[in-house]
Length: 371
Image 1 (cartoon, rainbow, N blue to C red):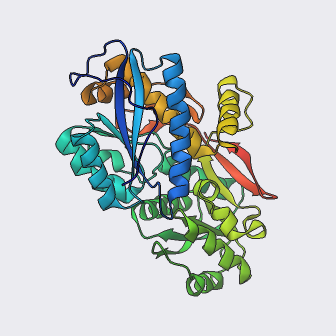
Image 2: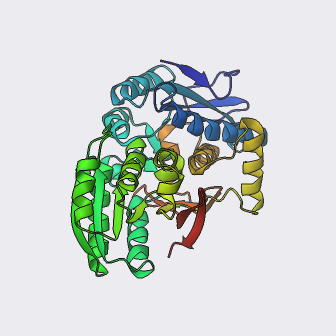
């Protein structure tokens, strides 16, 4: 396991969780720092580290200095569980940050057993927070996003005939059902749905079947390289319906995999983060991020930045103990994050603004706010 610390542990803290001057509150993060998904871990860690620096410079965690211990799970659920047990038993963390649906579900028994908060900044799977009273999510709501996209497809794009292609996992299955129900409710025809497995590379046989149905819209639900390959292969065979998907087309590199011509006009739902915003706190974040990391932040860098800021605000209120942080998270209302105003609901889900975006000449442009 690879371990990196966001702030060097310079001062000891007591096990009581009660704040005293110059104490350090250590939280944990298990994420891919090596392997194929390491590029995501880098983005997430950048956002967290920048926020942690600012928290400690401004005393945003009250009498506490915030420290994050990172453990490398290579996007593997078994490694994530091992990391979590180490973070809890040795590092005594009250909260663990993690992503990826499989990893999060694998961690539920561990956090329940030890009564530690599991904080998810960017995994979409509906129902995650129902698994445990210790599980919280601040990523955008996939249910609302899929409904927003479906409504726009029928009411604005005036499309009637659809096929839905989704990854065979909890997120893909849930998105299929949500999209199909909303499309049918609004008068759309869902001609066919089909699934694919993570890691698949050849989608041509299924795309040939879809093409024969002459759909106007193809909705694709499933993050990663597969999404880009589906669009690329469809475009190459002359199957060019209106492509529609979620924010992972932008933040996971799927648009590059598909190619500029193939994704032209593609529509997707996304969070409200705008790197060109003139709002002072967002513009300041973008400027600092660019100066520190040499590139503009994306939506996931922004939401991980907000995650650390939100956690710091709960530590300032409740101290460095799991139950206090858990109770304080329920009180997060209208937090002025760079990824959008954030309120945590009684279900431990989040209420955040969503938008629709469109790919135009290789750029990801805003086209519609949420209702």
